[in-house]
Structures are given as C-alpha cells and as structure tokens.
Image (cartoon, rainbow, N blue to C red; front, side):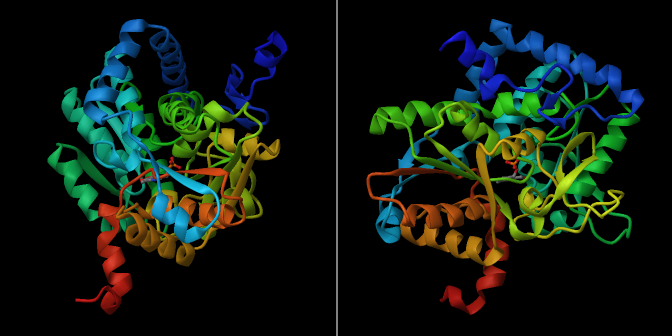
Length: 403
Ligand SMILES: Cc1ncc(COP(=O)(O)O)c(C=O)c1O
C-alpha cells in the first residue's frame, strides 16, 4: 500500500473526536465523560498489549469456537440459479450468534480495567446471553436491560441469561405498556449514568465514542476470516457480501476488512419498518449522530416494528451512516414476509436454521444472486441461529407445519 492509500483508507476509523465524516461523536451526559475517556484510553492500550490480544484470541478459539466455517450452500445456489452462495457461519459460535465476539472482547476489557460490575442492553437477547456467559466465566455480576415486548418474544434467551446468573430488567417506553431495543438503550444509559464506575458493555456499533469503534474492532474477526477462507476456497475475493443491520455490528464486522476492496459490493439489509438508512433522517440521540427514524422536529423516535427483535431499531451505527453518505455500502431493506420465506428456504435447502435477523440478509442476497452469473460469488453472514425464534415460527406456520 502507498502512503496515499493508507491515508485514504476507509478502515482508518473515526477521528479523535469519534466522527466518521459527519456522523458519530460523543453526545453524553457530563457525568459519563470521564468514563468514556477512561474507556477510550484503556481500549487503545489493550489493543496494543500483546498479552491482552493473545487472551482474546485464545478465548475466541477455545470458548467461542472460531474460526467458524465459510460454507458453500450448494443446494441453495442450485435453487436460486445464479451466483455461488457462501454462508459465513456465525450461528455456530458458542450461544449461536455473533454477539459473543464483542461481549468477550468487552468483558476482557472490563477485567483489564479492573471493573467489578457489568451493564448491558439487548434486543433479541443474543447480546444479553453472550454478556451473561462471559460475565459468569470471568466472575462479573451482569445486569441486562431488555424491552418488555422482547422479553416475551425471546423468552428462551431470558431464561439462559438467568441461568448464567444475570439479572434482567424489563424496560418500557413512555406509554409504560411496550418496550423494545430503543427503550433498553435508554434505560441502560440511565443506569450507567447513576453508576458510572461500572462497565457498560454496549451490544452494537452504536452509542457515544468510543463504543462504535470498540464494537467494530471486536467484530472485524468475521470479515478477516471471510477474506482468508474465500481466498483459500476460490482464490479470489467475493463479488458481494450481504448482512443484516440493526445497530450494525455484524455488518461492520463482515465488511470492515473489505472497505478498500472496491470490487467487492457490500450490502446492509434493514427491516422494512425500522429502515433508518433508507427512510430516516439525520439526528442526534442516545449519544451519537446518525440516520434515524424520528419526528419532524427531532424530539422523539418513531415506532418501529420487525419480525426480528434484533433489527427492530430506530437508528444505526454512525459508521454506516458515513458509508451510506459516501456510497460505499448499499443499504436496503426486506419485508417480514420476504425474510420469513427466506428463513424457511434455508431450512429446507440446507438444513440450517437461521435466526430471523439474518433471514433479512438471505432475502436480499437471493435477489442479488439471481441476477448474477454462475461464476460470481455472494457471501451471506448467518449471524445467528434460529432456536430463539422457533416458537414464533410455529405460531406463524400453524397447520402448514404438518404432522
Ligand atoms: C442474531 C442477531 N443478528 C443480528 C442482530 C442485529 O444486531 P447488529 O446489527 O448489531 O448485528 C441481533 C441483535 O440482537 C441478533 O441477535
């Protein structure tokens, strides 16, 4: 790489104020500022400390189960009749989702910093169980904040978190009746503000600086593995990578290592009724500046809805807003119906049960792959497994499931 290329690399991350172009920043209450600065300093120190990175690598391998396979979905490819489809198997990680890459990193960081208590928020519960598990492993009490609706929809994950010793706090919105990921984010920031010495383990590439950078760093293992594995299998880079996006951690994890490889098309797929990048406007909320679904005067978020709790989010990480603004990543959305039929298709063609969240990515990847020649390659990130969603799938399919 030339000095000019290094200077212009899209992988350089935010500036020292936490901005990706015009997006990001650190819009946090005064009381949290010293803690955010302490966190930023500790993060920079830890990633340059060989013993910290060795420990992270060790647990990624022996606890999480990385590297997971890049699997050629031959049956799905035949059925679609276009590009070769590969699946990155983050659903095979310990606890069945990509969230553990980040929880593990941040729990190790909390240990490095001498912290004694962990707060986290969650949507689908994947980040909650991952944080609870790592908390159990490294002797931290974990308090997880979760929306009332998600507690109902993702009850298996709530149970797992409790078995790992975590406390789960139910969160609701202003009506007091319902609660989703946004409400969990508000509650956890409030809790951390009144207990700033604790460690906040943020579950996605959102929040005030340095959280988006920390989460991107931890999740980038996904893209690094994809690059190595596709070069081994095909001796070239893929033509497209597709992942779903809620806050944006699995997507940024998959694509970060490919941002400067202009020949690789990158796709982020939101849910139709929480499509901040397609239908939102720029605003500042919950500590960062990004695209969001908000009222005209920017004083409130709009209600969102999705089959998949994990991507039922009114905004997205600031790096994604930047990548949209420069046109490097194609952001789009899929409907619940498209995702549910993609979910069933992967079950039937490959015997793989994806979570509802990556089913949105599968739906979009099918559309793209169909239009491509058979010598092209599309990679889909299967960022979670669907065990948590089978009760809902059963309710939706009813008699169609058969005897
Ligand atoms: C399985 C799964 N996939 C994807 C997501 C979306 O999060 P992100 O956009 O941060 O990857 C979640 C969030 O809970 C999830 O549980």
